[in-house]
Amino acid sequence: MAKKTPFNRITAFLCIVLMAFCVTSCASREVTSAIEEKIPAGDETVYADITLEGGTGKAYIESPVEITVKDGKMSAKLIWSSKNYDYMIVGGKRYDNESNGGKSTFTVEIDGTEEPLHVVADTVAMSVPHEIEYVIRWEKSEDHADDETGTKLPAASDTDAAVKALENAGMSVTDTIEPEYAKRFIIRRFGDYDLISIENSGDYLLVPENSSVPEGLPDTTVIIKKPVDSTYLVSTSAMDLINACGAIDRIKLSGTKESDWYVDEARSAMESGRMIYAGRYRAPDYEVILENGCDLAIENTMIYHEPAVQSKLTELGIPVLVETSSYENHPLGRLEWIKLYGVIFDKEEEAEKVFKEKLDIALPVISDNTDTHKSIAFFHVTANGLINVRRQGEYVTRMIDLAGAHYVPEDTGDESDGASTMNMQMEDFYSQAGEADIIIYNSTIGGEISSVAELVDKNPLFKEFKAVKDSNVYCTKRNLFQKTTQTAEFMKDLNDVANGIKRDYTFLKRLE
Image 1 (cartoon, one colour):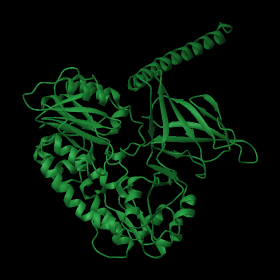
Image 2 (cartoon, one colour):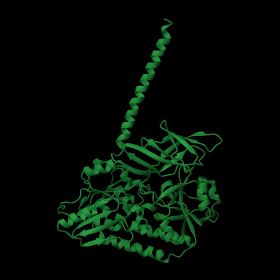
Image 3 (spheres, one colour):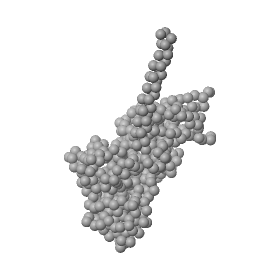
Image 4 (cartoon, helix red, strand yellow):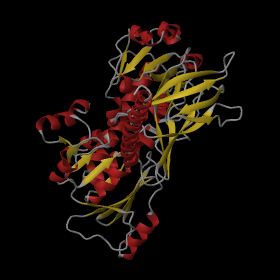
């Protein structure tokens, strides 16, 4: 009996281990299946902002991170600020540095971006190699910033084929709306039909009420039947434009909750029930959308992260228009998208009037364009202490330049990789912006700050900034990026701040 006891214990132990393995294995398969359902069927590359926790904070992974989906598998390209990492361990798998002398680079397989990613990175910067644990957190982009994530846009539809099909149907171009400042859309008028072509988005044919759809159009041409009076609006930047031209009553469904609107008319419409919440871009309430007779969904480029949602809306017979105004480099280009909404909602005269009024404010600032010889830094501090700045040539930096000031930091590269922002270490930011005449804290992501002391609490090094010593510190108001029609007013704010004109600014407040 005594001899059998060890055997029985071992047998019991092995059974427990086997059972645990089975449970873990089954759970793993369930998680994997859930993740695979979220992975797009086709190949694509997108970008996601991250925050990094762990280590000393001296080294960081560049943000945004490039994420590639290929053959149903997802991988992330992690580029460190340092060249001293020789390998990483992710998901139990070792990845060696791909770079030959440059910044340490690793392409690693990931299951998704819903949960934090725990990794180990080995650095040779110390006297002996040392493994350090890090946590990568995928930031959830809010709608006011979701056009700045560096999304790789899809190829445009076949505009030439759409035009040819309309011509074969006996139509001809009777007018063309070619914007002066906007470069991302053009509208060709074929009598009462309007063909809207949006770069890296597609072609959209507006069909008059009680009129037929011409035959022979490419399958990629999206048909929008007029009148458009029950729209599901996801793109927050479009709301102010639509409201300004008097078409807010056409927006019945919102992808933004009432509490998150800074457009007063939108908030009021939701309070009264004239507009209802129908879910965010990634999780729309299809039942609510159908019940309210939705005839158009206006999305921004974040929908490209959720291709299944776009396909489902299309399957339900709801045309999806993806607006790309966030990719307009000229500040007035974003404003000029009001003309597109004027055409969609039959408010062309109203749209033209608003655009002209705003030009009357902006053009004097632009035409004067006297160099104030003042430098302005525009930034915010991320959750892990990095400094998020705009890339040179991005539209906020263009507004600063057009207002007669000079944007810093200069060493930010350009937008060729699709990202309009980048993160920097505080020391690097100080070396380039420490002598800036004016610093402006961007509150739209991290929230407003009320004092210079609150800024210094984020990093004591701010005490050494020239602008802090000279009391030239400003914070934007939270409504800045939803107030698309007031681009001109913000440019006037920038111009007056650079010229030392003190007043109650529209979008800026001076911090004491």
